[in-house]
Length: 142
Image (cartoon, rainbow, N blue to C red; front, side):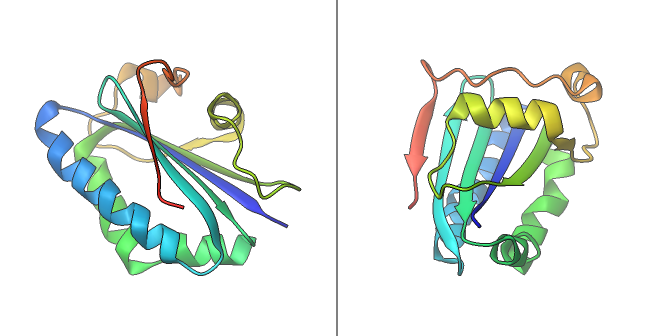
């Protein structure tokens, strides 16, 4: 059964954008090459916000990537770089990626916040704005 993983992060200041973008651009191809990855897409929004949507063939393949060294290194640094960070995952019958509105709904309903050192008010209230698809730019890695 395919599994979906959604992650949303927001850089806490402009000065963290270059390193965050660099790490996200490195992570996309790594995720794409990971065993069991069916698709991965990055959505860059206005307001220093990024969404990652990936679909995996199995829960174990998704967990293997989540626990990989490459991802752990980035996740440790997110606490310093971001003022908002959250993730969710779920099984689904289809291997098609969910829409961004569906990803938002699932993240808001069943997501969990990551620890960040300088949380925004929205992060503290776990309020996640819908992605601005009209102004966002998407990059598909697979």
